Image (cartoon, rainbow, N blue to C red; front, side):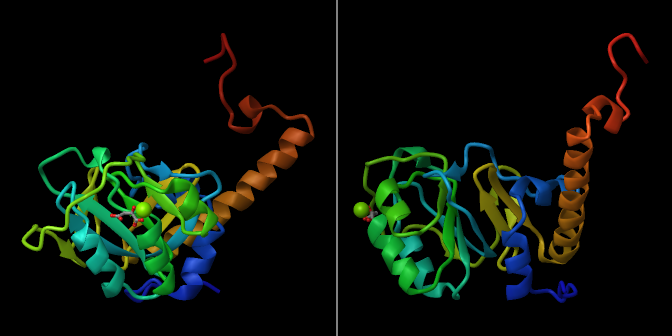
Amino acid sequence: MTAATTGVVTAELVREAAALPAATLHEAAGKIGALPAAIGPVRPGMRVAGPALPVLSPPGDNLWLHRAIYAAEPGDVLVVAFGDGADPLEYGHWGEVMAVAALHRGIAGLVTSGGVRDGDQMAERGFPVFAPSLCIRGTGKDPDGRGSVGAPVRIGGVTVRRGDLVVADGDGVVVLPVADAAGAVRAAARREAAEQEIFDRLAAGETSLDIYRLPAEGES
Ligand SMILES: O=C([O-])CC(=O)C(=O)O
Ligand SMILES: [Mg+2]
């Protein structure tokens, strides 16, 4: 049974969400929460689901990301946004060492709008990372750099708050507000069941034009 919406994303809800495609959750939630298409798995097969821990960092620096590893709760997904300055795609803000540190803390994965490195090693270690670039260039650790852990961040028009439900797979990343998460998971499961019915009808010879009642060429 799905837990009622109580202001937290429960472990049970995360388990249910993890079995659902990110695209279906986005559709089922009312077409909300899709992060930019450039943010994808750094290696095929990566998937993650869990509550968000938002992080803000200056581009080209990763001290706030190190801090976030030790502020996270087990199961969290770090969601990292970058402030103004250098191009965040041109730095490897996170890599194997940080992934191993995160695994020791029980962190479920990383979603970031900046570059990372050590893609192969992170895949081998089973740490899922969703990023728009791989970049070998290293970062600084400015103790005075402006950032935050736990405060809301914005990525591509989506506001990410502490505890929001993050689901990421080969298609991309969706972030759903806590208040919408349980309803979206239920609606997404219904959508998946409906799609199974469509597959059965296609196997039985019906066309997608028939099933969706779409006009064929020349019809209106
Ligand atoms: O060292 C860094 O800043 C990022 C990295 O490559 C690692 O964590 O292994
Ligand atoms: Mg490294």
